[in-house]
Length: 510
Image (cartoon, rainbow, N blue to C red; front, side, top):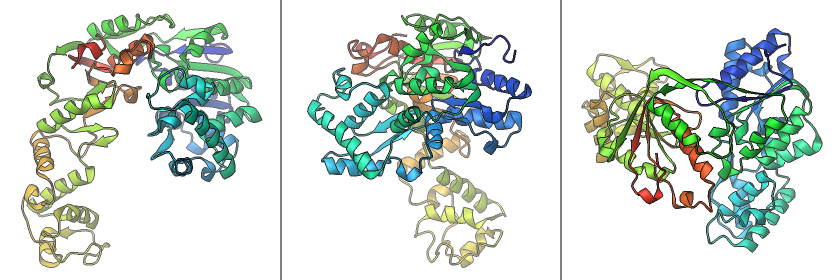
């Protein structure tokens, strides 16, 4: 039987670093070798990141063009294509802003982020409405759970929910949740020989209903995930359905070797955390043979991130402010919220300028234009972008630009790049002194734990502080916190560093 001992409906539990995606693609390969048409294989994930990873790995592994793999997608993407929806009919931030103006409520942004699979908005009314939709409960029932700001008005919430439905109907617009509902109602699911559902622990009740519509038309179904890494309950995810699924399937298999988590104290701490969860699949897996290190600090200044790859994790972004300050003080290159600490164009301009002014070499016009952007008018008098240089030329020497193209200076970058503020200049100088590889991806990443799910690094620095709402057990299930910090601890490949909390009363005990 293709798939070895796997049967008609199988759950594949993938603890951290056990190679869940690799296992699923190996199964895909088995079916392809047995003659299954790639167009009869469905591979769907909770996030666009995961679906893209699976698709790109499939392209490389099987030497198949992307256009020949039609069903490696997110659930929303499948619904979008199956229903023949046009992009202009999908609700965008602009539409939500217009709706807000019509109803007299401020809405700056609102969008469905397929990177993490979550609806985002600066407007709490919209967030509550969306959460009720994905949980398939009345909006006032979600309101009554008291997981919202005190100034949210109950009657207004109900009215906005009704008005939003009217607005979409009048404008002929559809949102991401509407897509899933229409997909189910219209019964447009393709028929698959083999169906794979990845990241199943993060599916909402609405998404689970769509999954059931898919597997009703599939010969074989593999549902992969890890309930221990279910950290999106706050956004409507329903891990309980994933756990209860064991009663409906033929087989439950656990991948039992982690290729990420080292043996010793990191693995031991992760097990201590996850064993606190009351409702879960009981599972065991082995760490790597290499031993990991666990270090604790009483003060952030004790942490040395001068070398190596680092992932700095906290439960909320504002807890990372002190770490950002430390990185800037020390001259460590980092990223936060998917943005580098210094614009790459500026760093490339500095590198190009120093190479240009100190060596007898030419630079292409594109690089020179980038440099001139940061030099400022006092340094580039008389130069007009694209007017005095021939874009067809392979390159120019710095002497040519001084003689003919308005360049006024041939000095070190921090004197030539006169428009930089002192803080930025000092930060870059420290980075260069530290020999940071500024043209590459920053080696330090600052992230919330939710944002780092699926990621890993040699070194992980964990901040155990949590928000007030997170420690209120009437507000958040303790299992959520256990899973959250389990995910954080299991990002470490070599060493885990834990900082003492700012406030012990608002901290997770590690």
